Length: 169
Image 1 (cartoon, rainbow, N blue to C red):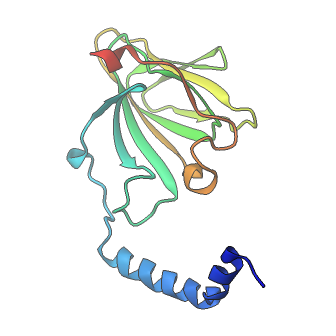
Image 2 (image 1 turned 90 degrees about the horizontal axis):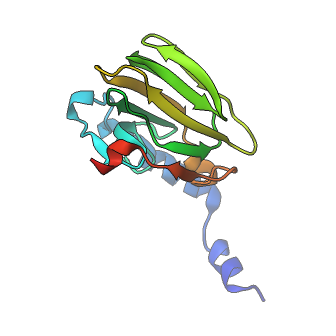
């Protein structure tokens, strides 16, 4: 005599289920978004600042879901929120100059640079600062979509430690 879960699992041929999922994914990919146009993306104001999401776990109409890609704009003389997360993120500096505080250590950057945020078991604390008082900084961040694999905490926790001053504007 099996329990309810065992009985439910026994009713499914999981091998054939893989083929059903495959066929469903193939059909979806025929019509999924293959070019994400920045001009079509709204700018979001959130606790981290000003962001434009290209790929995100809740954006489900794109052909892939294995990455998170976001453009962050930091107004002149402002800063992002400060967060703790697992790291493992690469950031391309599209415009501007400033610095990133990584676990309290200052790292200067300018347009054309790439910032490598290390992956650490206990996480990292990060905040970006625009040192230019006249022009915005634009950062494009990319990371694996660990959220889909291990949840939002991504093994090390996910905490907003300080809001961007631009989230209150």
